[in-house]
Length: 201
Image 1 (spheres, rainbow, N blue to C red):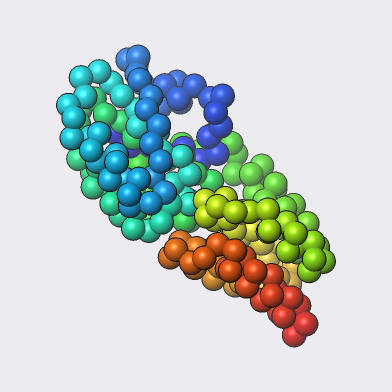
Image 2 (cartoon, helix red, strand yellow):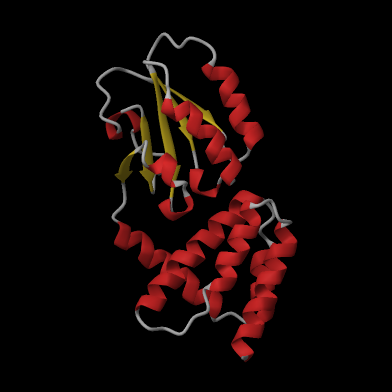
């Protein structure tokens, strides 16, 4: 197996130990959020890798669909000494074709992670309109916005499972819009407006 998906990976973890690789490996980090990022990785993979090397790509669950599709080609046919370690939080946001080619390693028990996301979703949904705008106004980049929405979706799903009446659809729609390169601030503003309107219905 040359591709791994690490759920809930944190910086202080020993990557070689987690992947159970006996040889000493070199770790090189690449961004994989956009097609352009993955093309930079493609240029690297054209070079012959002599010593065991791990390509670390963080937050694959917030990468665009196009980037994930492009990355798939490298995961399918890696060089003998090349390993791919993808990190993320929500595997639901990762293409099934990538999941099928990766060994899944869940570093933090899922329950603990979902509990945190559930608490965050509860806090956000009980904020006033002004507080919601203020919180989302601090999110400037796409990656952070998608990460926030992924967390809200998972947390809201947990609340729904306990029969809490929540409209999860605005989070899902905003998430999809951002994955399709929608304007970050515009989509987050629209999210707050939609949530407020659904509360009044």
